[in-house]
Structures are given as C-alpha cells and as structure tokens.
Image (cartoon, rainbow, N blue to C red):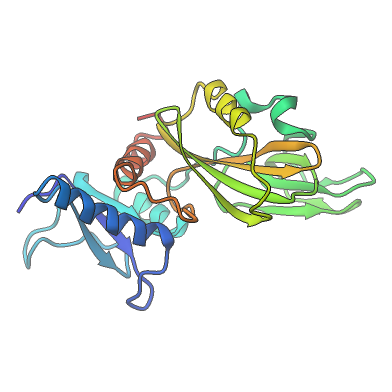
Length: 253
C-alpha cells in the first residue's frame, strides 16, 4: 500500500499529547474517507527513528514528515537532513510598521554581554534560533551576546492566533486572555497582504490592549498550538508545505 505522505507523530509514554497531532490524525482520516483511498498515513513513535514499512523496509525518507515538539522536529532535521537550526520568523521586516507594532521594537546584535541601561524593563528574544534565549530584562539587568528582537514591555489583554495559508486568513483562535475582546480582522488581513515574503503556511499571533490590535510574532506552521483550529482539508498540506520549506533551507515552498 503506497501513501503520498506519512506523518511521524510523536507520543510521550505511549500517549498523543499535542493538540495539533489529534487534529492532524482526524484530518488524515477525513482525507482518506473523502477520497476513498489512502492519501495519507501516520505512524506513532516515541523517537525520531525512521519508521519501517515491514521487518526489512523503511518508509521512503522523502515521504516522512515529523510532527511533535520543536525539539522532536529539529532532532529529525538534524539526524536525516543535517540541518541543525531553524531561524524563527518572529516579526518579519515587512511588518515592522508602527500601525502593526504599536510599541517600539528593534533588532539588536552584539558580540558581548549587553546591559539594559534604560529605566524600564525590555523584552529580549533570540532572533536566530527557535527556543533560544528569551526573557524580560529589568533595568541594569543583562543578556548574552547574540542577535535579538528587543521590544517595549506592554500590557496584553487578549491574545489570538491567526492561521494563514496561501496569503489567506483561514482560521483565528483565542489562546490567552479575554476571549470576548475580538481582534481587528481587517488589520490582520492587511498584515497578511504586506507580508510579501511569507511562507505558504504560518501562524500570526496578535495581541489586544488599550492601543488596539498589534502583532506579537509569526511562526512557521510546525509545533505550534492550534487552540481549536481544525480545518481538515488544509491541515495536512499546511504541515507538508512548512516541512518542504524547512528541508530546503528556509526557502519558501
């Protein structure tokens, strides 16, 4: 039996623990039911070991897409594609506009330790690796050498995740704070249109406070919570598109 793609879904102590894994499994079942053939397959695994078709044959490497934590996916990338880092999107240059940020944001590079010489805290996040150094740094506090996204610390009353595919808003879910505060959808759509270098599939996080709706950051579509987003028609191809981008060195696919 031949499948177009096989998703290697991470388990922990034999359990599926991530919301995107549950949703993807249902999407796989939907596709196979809708087309009345095995369009997609999935294998559950505690490890990133390449799954076997039988006792002697492995699934073709080009057909496997790992689904799990950031660490799980990065380990698979390093093991089979010799790729040891994925640069986060954070805030793309096209969206570094005052109407989207509603706070001051800078990219800062340093080869030495840096001290926050200001009189207010700042948010500092690694701009070169996912799950890198990130923290709120108080006045006179420091952070290590590197390239960072640095921003003003602001109040956030509600946080929402927008899901984007082919430059279209395809989902919008509240994930923290007051769910009755709805974001400015027209502003989100304008962000999507301005993000010209965007990958096919990504998540766009926005916050809401007294200044309105503003961008928090963007993520490639892997290892990110769905919070109820479950478009069964789109989920598999969004994961596939992002995986193609990752294995092609970050180039848009």
